[in-house]
Length: 380
Ligand code: FES
Image (tube, rainbow, N blue to C red; front, side, top):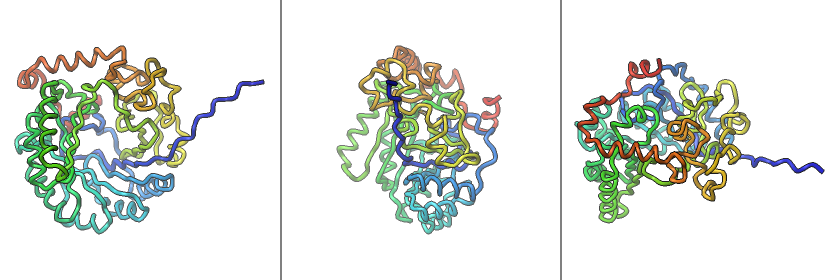
Protein backbone atom coordinates (compact mmCIF):
# COMPACT_ATOMS: atom_id res chain seq x y z
CA UNK A 1 0.00 0.00 0.00
CA UNK A 2 1.33 3.44 -0.92
CA UNK A 3 2.16 5.86 1.90
CA UNK A 4 -0.40 8.71 2.07
CA UNK A 5 0.75 11.91 0.40
CA UNK A 6 1.46 14.80 2.74
CA UNK A 7 -1.31 17.37 2.30
CA UNK A 8 -0.30 20.98 2.66
CA UNK A 9 -2.79 23.00 4.69
CA UNK A 10 -4.71 25.59 2.67
CA UNK A 11 -3.51 29.05 3.70
CA UNK A 12 -5.90 31.42 5.43
CA UNK A 13 -7.04 34.42 3.42
CA UNK A 14 -4.90 37.57 3.58
CA UNK A 15 -5.83 39.98 6.32
CA UNK A 16 -3.84 43.06 5.38
CA UNK A 17 -3.50 44.62 1.96
CA UNK A 18 -0.72 47.19 1.69
CA UNK A 19 -1.12 49.42 -1.35
CA UNK A 20 2.23 51.03 -2.09
CA UNK A 21 0.73 53.60 -4.41
CA UNK A 22 3.98 55.20 -5.53
CA UNK A 23 7.69 55.16 -4.75
CA UNK A 24 7.82 58.91 -5.45
CA UNK A 25 8.43 60.82 -2.23
CA UNK A 26 9.27 64.42 -1.33
CA UNK A 27 11.43 63.18 1.56
CA UNK A 28 14.85 61.58 1.25
CA UNK A 29 15.07 59.57 4.46
CA UNK A 30 18.30 57.73 5.11
CA UNK A 31 16.40 54.78 6.67
CA UNK A 32 13.66 54.33 4.04
CA UNK A 33 12.71 50.69 3.52
CA UNK A 34 11.80 51.19 -0.15
CA UNK A 35 14.03 49.42 -2.68
CA UNK A 36 17.23 51.36 -3.34
CA UNK A 37 16.62 51.01 -7.08
CA UNK A 38 13.11 52.47 -6.83
CA UNK A 39 13.77 54.75 -9.80
CA UNK A 40 13.72 51.65 -12.00
CA UNK A 41 10.12 51.01 -10.96
CA UNK A 42 7.88 52.83 -13.42
CA UNK A 43 4.44 52.47 -14.90
CA UNK A 44 2.33 52.94 -11.76
CA UNK A 45 -1.02 51.19 -11.58
CA UNK A 46 -3.93 53.31 -12.77
CA UNK A 47 -6.94 54.19 -10.64
CA UNK A 48 -8.98 51.47 -12.37
CA UNK A 49 -6.27 48.89 -11.79
CA UNK A 50 -6.12 49.75 -8.07
CA UNK A 51 -9.92 49.41 -7.94
CA UNK A 52 -9.58 45.88 -9.30
CA UNK A 53 -6.82 45.05 -6.80
CA UNK A 54 -8.93 46.29 -3.90
CA UNK A 55 -12.08 44.52 -5.09
CA UNK A 56 -10.27 41.22 -5.54
CA UNK A 57 -8.42 41.49 -2.23
CA UNK A 58 -11.64 42.28 -0.38
CA UNK A 59 -13.37 39.35 -2.06
CA UNK A 60 -10.49 37.17 -0.85
CA UNK A 61 -11.13 38.30 2.72
CA UNK A 62 -8.68 41.16 3.36
CA UNK A 63 -10.13 43.67 5.82
CA UNK A 64 -7.37 46.17 6.52
CA UNK A 65 -5.93 48.40 3.81
CA UNK A 66 -2.86 50.60 4.22
CA UNK A 67 -2.11 53.30 1.67
CA UNK A 68 1.61 53.92 1.69
CA UNK A 69 4.52 54.63 -0.61
CA UNK A 70 6.69 56.64 -1.07
CA UNK A 71 4.24 59.38 -0.27
CA UNK A 72 0.70 58.26 -1.13
CA UNK A 73 -0.52 61.87 -1.18
CA UNK A 74 1.43 62.34 -4.41
CA UNK A 75 -1.33 60.34 -6.09
CA UNK A 76 -4.08 62.74 -7.20
CA UNK A 77 -6.57 59.88 -7.11
CA UNK A 78 -6.02 59.03 -3.43
CA UNK A 79 -9.48 60.32 -2.48
CA UNK A 80 -11.07 58.16 -5.21
CA UNK A 81 -9.16 55.12 -3.97
CA UNK A 82 -10.23 55.73 -0.38
CA UNK A 83 -13.85 56.15 -1.48
CA UNK A 84 -13.75 52.77 -3.21
CA UNK A 85 -11.94 51.11 -0.29
CA UNK A 86 -14.55 52.46 2.11
CA UNK A 87 -17.37 51.27 -0.14
CA UNK A 88 -15.83 47.81 -0.14
CA UNK A 89 -15.76 47.77 3.66
CA UNK A 90 -12.00 48.02 4.27
CA UNK A 91 -10.60 49.65 7.41
CA UNK A 92 -8.29 52.21 5.80
CA UNK A 93 -5.03 53.68 7.02
CA UNK A 94 -2.96 56.44 5.41
CA UNK A 95 0.76 56.20 6.16
CA UNK A 96 2.19 59.60 5.37
CA UNK A 97 5.00 62.09 5.86
CA UNK A 98 2.28 64.75 5.94
CA UNK A 99 3.67 66.56 2.92
CA UNK A 100 0.68 67.44 0.76
CA UNK A 101 -1.95 66.94 3.45
CA UNK A 102 -3.68 70.29 3.09
CA UNK A 103 -6.95 71.12 4.80
CA UNK A 104 -8.81 70.60 1.51
CA UNK A 105 -7.34 67.13 1.13
CA UNK A 106 -7.88 65.97 4.70
CA UNK A 107 -11.50 67.12 4.46
CA UNK A 108 -11.92 65.23 1.18
CA UNK A 109 -10.28 62.13 2.68
CA UNK A 110 -12.54 62.32 5.71
CA UNK A 111 -15.58 62.61 3.42
CA UNK A 112 -14.25 59.64 1.44
CA UNK A 113 -14.27 57.54 4.62
CA UNK A 114 -10.60 57.36 5.56
CA UNK A 115 -10.42 55.75 9.02
CA UNK A 116 -6.90 56.38 10.25
CA UNK A 117 -3.78 58.48 9.58
CA UNK A 118 -0.25 57.70 10.73
CA UNK A 119 2.05 60.70 10.56
CA UNK A 120 5.82 60.33 10.60
CA UNK A 121 8.35 62.60 12.26
CA UNK A 122 12.10 62.10 12.02
CA UNK A 123 12.95 63.79 15.32
CA UNK A 124 11.75 66.27 17.93
CA UNK A 125 14.14 68.93 16.68
CA UNK A 126 13.76 70.83 13.47
CA UNK A 127 17.48 70.46 12.77
CA UNK A 128 17.63 66.68 12.91
CA UNK A 129 14.16 66.13 11.44
CA UNK A 130 15.08 68.20 8.42
CA UNK A 131 18.61 66.77 8.18
CA UNK A 132 17.49 63.14 8.24
CA UNK A 133 14.79 63.68 5.63
CA UNK A 134 16.94 66.13 3.69
CA UNK A 135 13.96 68.50 3.55
CA UNK A 136 12.50 71.44 5.44
CA UNK A 137 9.36 69.73 6.65
CA UNK A 138 9.39 69.89 10.46
CA UNK A 139 7.11 72.93 10.80
CA UNK A 140 4.78 71.61 8.14
CA UNK A 141 4.45 68.28 9.99
CA UNK A 142 3.38 70.10 13.12
CA UNK A 143 0.67 71.90 11.15
CA UNK A 144 -0.47 68.59 9.69
CA UNK A 145 -0.61 67.09 13.19
CA UNK A 146 -2.97 69.91 14.21
CA UNK A 147 -5.14 69.24 11.14
CA UNK A 148 -5.34 65.55 12.00
CA UNK A 149 -6.68 66.50 15.42
CA UNK A 150 -9.02 69.11 13.97
CA UNK A 151 -10.55 66.46 11.73
CA UNK A 152 -11.10 64.20 14.67
CA UNK A 153 -8.67 61.44 13.79
CA UNK A 154 -6.80 59.62 16.52
CA UNK A 155 -3.31 61.14 16.63
CA UNK A 156 -0.89 58.38 15.68
CA UNK A 157 2.72 59.50 15.40
CA UNK A 158 5.63 57.45 14.21
CA UNK A 159 9.29 58.23 14.68
CA UNK A 160 11.98 55.88 13.40
CA UNK A 161 14.87 55.69 15.88
CA UNK A 162 18.62 55.22 15.38
CA UNK A 163 21.86 56.37 16.93
CA UNK A 164 21.28 60.03 15.96
CA UNK A 165 17.91 60.53 17.64
CA UNK A 166 17.88 57.89 20.40
CA UNK A 167 19.29 60.42 22.88
CA UNK A 168 16.19 62.56 22.14
CA UNK A 169 13.60 59.97 23.06
CA UNK A 170 12.36 62.05 25.99
CA UNK A 171 11.96 65.10 23.73
CA UNK A 172 10.19 63.03 21.09
CA UNK A 173 7.72 61.78 23.72
CA UNK A 174 7.24 65.35 24.99
CA UNK A 175 6.53 66.47 21.44
CA UNK A 176 3.97 63.70 21.01
CA UNK A 177 2.27 64.68 24.27
CA UNK A 178 2.23 68.35 23.24
CA UNK A 179 0.57 67.32 19.98
CA UNK A 180 -1.98 65.34 21.99
CA UNK A 181 -1.01 62.01 20.42
CA UNK A 182 -2.93 58.93 21.46
CA UNK A 183 -0.29 56.60 20.05
CA UNK A 184 3.42 57.01 19.56
CA UNK A 185 5.31 54.37 17.65
CA UNK A 186 9.03 54.49 18.42
CA UNK A 187 10.31 51.88 16.03
CA UNK A 188 14.05 51.51 15.84
CA UNK A 189 15.48 51.24 12.36
CA UNK A 190 15.55 47.75 10.89
CA UNK A 191 18.21 47.24 8.29
CA UNK A 192 16.60 46.92 4.88
CA UNK A 193 16.63 49.07 1.77
CA UNK A 194 18.27 52.45 2.34
CA UNK A 195 18.77 51.72 6.02
CA UNK A 196 20.99 48.77 5.09
CA UNK A 197 23.10 51.08 2.94
CA UNK A 198 23.46 53.37 5.96
CA UNK A 199 23.76 50.69 8.63
CA UNK A 200 27.10 51.87 9.98
CA UNK A 201 25.69 55.37 10.27
CA UNK A 202 22.46 54.41 12.00
CA UNK A 203 23.28 51.44 14.26
CA UNK A 204 22.85 52.38 17.92
CA UNK A 205 24.83 51.07 20.85
CA UNK A 206 23.37 48.75 23.49
CA UNK A 207 23.78 51.57 25.98
CA UNK A 208 21.73 53.97 23.85
CA UNK A 209 18.94 51.42 23.57
CA UNK A 210 18.99 50.61 27.27
CA UNK A 211 18.78 54.29 28.20
CA UNK A 212 15.97 54.91 25.72
CA UNK A 213 14.02 51.93 27.06
CA UNK A 214 14.36 53.30 30.57
CA UNK A 215 13.08 56.69 29.43
CA UNK A 216 10.10 55.05 27.74
CA UNK A 217 9.34 52.99 30.86
CA UNK A 218 9.46 56.12 33.02
CA UNK A 219 7.05 57.97 30.72
CA UNK A 220 4.71 54.99 30.47
CA UNK A 221 4.46 54.88 34.25
CA UNK A 222 3.92 58.64 34.45
CA UNK A 223 1.38 59.22 31.66
CA UNK A 224 -0.63 56.00 31.95
CA UNK A 225 -3.25 55.68 29.21
CA UNK A 226 -2.90 59.26 27.97
CA UNK A 227 -0.61 58.11 25.17
CA UNK A 228 0.28 54.52 24.29
CA UNK A 229 3.99 54.28 23.51
CA UNK A 230 5.25 51.42 21.41
CA UNK A 231 9.02 50.85 21.53
CA UNK A 232 10.50 48.35 19.09
CA UNK A 233 14.20 47.53 19.34
CA UNK A 234 16.28 46.59 16.29
CA UNK A 235 16.17 42.90 15.41
CA UNK A 236 19.97 42.76 15.75
CA UNK A 237 19.65 43.36 19.50
CA UNK A 238 17.10 40.59 20.08
CA UNK A 239 18.13 37.01 20.73
CA UNK A 240 15.17 35.54 18.89
CA UNK A 241 14.00 36.59 15.44
CA UNK A 242 10.75 38.39 14.81
CA UNK A 243 7.87 36.53 13.21
CA UNK A 244 8.33 38.52 10.03
CA UNK A 245 5.02 39.28 8.31
CA UNK A 246 3.50 36.98 10.93
CA UNK A 247 4.69 34.18 8.67
CA UNK A 248 5.31 34.31 4.93
CA UNK A 249 2.07 34.34 2.92
CA UNK A 250 0.01 34.20 6.08
CA UNK A 251 -1.67 37.60 6.54
CA UNK A 252 0.18 40.20 4.45
CA UNK A 253 -0.31 40.97 0.78
CA UNK A 254 1.58 43.98 -0.53
CA UNK A 255 1.19 45.49 -3.97
CA UNK A 256 3.99 47.69 -5.29
CA UNK A 257 3.38 50.77 -7.48
CA UNK A 258 3.99 48.78 -10.68
CA UNK A 259 1.61 45.99 -9.66
CA UNK A 260 4.21 43.53 -8.38
CA UNK A 261 2.65 41.53 -5.54
CA UNK A 262 4.85 41.26 -2.46
CA UNK A 263 4.76 38.62 0.30
CA UNK A 264 6.90 41.04 2.37
CA UNK A 265 8.17 44.60 2.06
CA UNK A 266 11.56 43.62 0.65
CA UNK A 267 10.69 40.59 -1.45
CA UNK A 268 11.97 42.33 -4.58
CA UNK A 269 15.49 41.78 -3.27
CA UNK A 270 15.15 38.02 -2.85
CA UNK A 271 16.91 36.23 -5.72
CA UNK A 272 15.13 33.46 -7.56
CA UNK A 273 11.69 34.62 -6.50
CA UNK A 274 9.36 35.03 -9.43
CA UNK A 275 7.07 37.77 -8.15
CA UNK A 276 3.60 37.82 -9.69
CA UNK A 277 2.01 41.00 -11.04
CA UNK A 278 -1.61 42.01 -10.52
CA UNK A 279 -1.73 42.96 -14.20
CA UNK A 280 -1.23 39.32 -15.15
CA UNK A 281 -2.80 37.32 -12.31
CA UNK A 282 -5.85 37.68 -10.10
CA UNK A 283 -5.31 38.26 -6.38
CA UNK A 284 -6.83 34.83 -5.78
CA UNK A 285 -4.19 33.16 -8.01
CA UNK A 286 -1.43 35.28 -6.50
CA UNK A 287 -2.33 34.42 -2.93
CA UNK A 288 -3.07 30.72 -3.27
CA UNK A 289 -1.20 29.53 -6.36
CA UNK A 290 1.84 31.71 -7.08
CA UNK A 291 5.24 30.16 -6.40
CA UNK A 292 6.39 33.34 -4.64
CA UNK A 293 3.64 33.32 -2.01
CA UNK A 294 4.08 29.59 -1.43
CA UNK A 295 7.87 29.61 -1.29
CA UNK A 296 8.27 30.02 2.48
CA UNK A 297 4.86 28.88 3.69
CA UNK A 298 4.85 26.06 6.20
CA UNK A 299 8.19 24.60 7.29
CA UNK A 300 9.30 22.32 4.44
CA UNK A 301 11.80 24.94 3.31
CA UNK A 302 13.45 25.29 6.72
CA UNK A 303 17.01 24.26 7.48
CA UNK A 304 18.48 23.38 10.86
CA UNK A 305 18.35 24.70 13.52
CA UNK A 306 14.86 26.01 12.56
CA UNK A 307 13.57 22.68 11.27
CA UNK A 308 13.73 20.94 14.64
CA UNK A 309 13.23 24.06 16.76
CA UNK A 310 10.21 24.07 19.11
CA UNK A 311 9.86 27.83 18.51
CA UNK A 312 9.44 27.58 14.74
CA UNK A 313 5.66 27.87 14.97
CA UNK A 314 6.13 31.15 16.83
CA UNK A 315 8.81 32.93 14.80
CA UNK A 316 8.68 31.02 11.46
CA UNK A 317 12.48 31.11 11.30
CA UNK A 318 12.54 34.91 11.33
CA UNK A 319 12.94 37.15 8.32
CA UNK A 320 13.88 35.74 4.90
CA UNK A 321 15.25 39.08 3.71
CA UNK A 322 17.42 39.47 6.79
CA UNK A 323 18.66 35.88 6.36
CA UNK A 324 19.68 36.74 2.81
CA UNK A 325 21.49 39.91 3.82
CA UNK A 326 23.29 38.40 6.81
CA UNK A 327 23.73 34.75 5.83
CA UNK A 328 23.64 35.01 2.04
CA UNK A 329 20.80 32.46 1.96
CA UNK A 330 17.14 33.42 2.19
CA UNK A 331 16.25 29.96 3.54
CA UNK A 332 18.76 30.10 6.40
CA UNK A 333 17.83 30.69 10.00
CA UNK A 334 17.63 34.44 10.53
CA UNK A 335 21.12 35.13 11.99
CA UNK A 336 19.72 37.43 14.67
CA UNK A 337 18.55 34.23 16.41
CA UNK A 338 20.93 33.15 19.19
CA UNK A 339 20.54 29.58 17.90
CA UNK A 340 21.89 30.52 14.47
CA UNK A 341 25.49 29.42 13.82
CA UNK A 342 25.97 32.87 12.27
CA UNK A 343 24.83 34.93 15.27
CA UNK A 344 28.41 36.04 15.78
CA UNK A 345 28.21 38.10 12.58
CA UNK A 346 25.42 40.14 14.11
CA UNK A 347 27.35 40.57 17.36
CA UNK A 348 30.32 41.82 15.39
CA UNK A 349 28.20 44.42 13.64
CA UNK A 350 26.89 45.62 17.01
CA UNK A 351 30.39 45.61 18.49
CA UNK A 352 31.65 47.65 15.57
CA UNK A 353 28.91 50.24 16.13
CA UNK A 354 29.58 50.40 19.87
CA UNK A 355 33.25 51.13 19.37
CA UNK A 356 32.85 54.08 17.09
CA UNK A 357 31.76 57.57 18.02
CA UNK A 358 28.96 59.16 16.07
CA UNK A 359 31.04 62.04 14.71
CA UNK A 360 33.81 59.67 13.64
CA UNK A 361 31.33 57.41 11.89
CA UNK A 362 29.76 60.35 10.13
CA UNK A 363 33.18 61.58 9.08
CA UNK A 364 34.20 58.18 7.75
CA UNK A 365 31.26 57.63 5.48
CA UNK A 366 28.58 60.14 4.57
CA UNK A 367 24.94 59.13 4.89
CA UNK A 368 23.46 58.06 1.58
CA UNK A 369 20.13 59.84 1.32
CA UNK A 370 17.26 58.39 -0.66
CA UNK A 371 17.44 60.48 -3.80
CA UNK A 372 16.75 59.70 -7.43
CA UNK A 373 20.39 60.18 -8.37
CA UNK A 374 21.63 57.91 -5.55
CA UNK A 375 19.03 55.34 -6.57
CA UNK A 376 20.30 55.33 -10.15
CA UNK A 377 23.91 55.05 -8.97
CA UNK A 378 23.12 52.16 -6.63
CA UNK A 379 21.04 50.40 -9.27
CA UNK A 380 23.78 50.55 -11.89
FE1 FES B 1 11.14 39.95 3.70
FE2 FES B 1 11.11 39.82 6.42
S1 FES B 1 11.17 41.59 5.15
S2 FES B 1 10.74 38.23 4.96
